[in-house]
Length: 138
Image 1 (cartoon, rainbow, N blue to C red):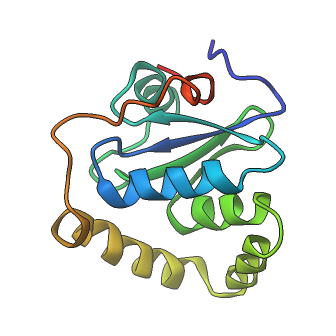
Image 2 (spheres, rainbow, N blue to C red):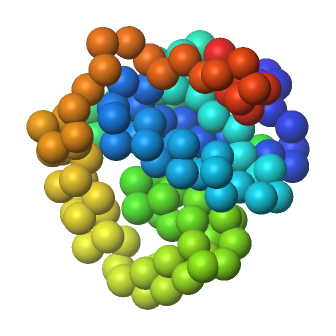
């Protein structure tokens, strides 16, 4: 069983992707209600959730949102749910839910496919600062 508090949502991100890391830092800065915890796809917790939900990492390899109550969300749906939970003005992004998922995910996949080329890649996973360590799961 995963040790994730029921009132938290877990963002599972690509720990070597500069765009993903910048996005995590943005969420941390704007998460005023302390809704989110984080782990890299490459870490033990991320790998356990991928295995538990039989996620094909050849198709989804950049962002997942997990909670005990809502299960797993991926791609554009995960990104929009995260934005919504950050509160105003980020929550206004939820308006994009009116766009059919296949279109949202096509845009998401295009960015995800090019993220290393456009934003770069680290040699190893992001290491949180000591003050942020409590927000990250191994």
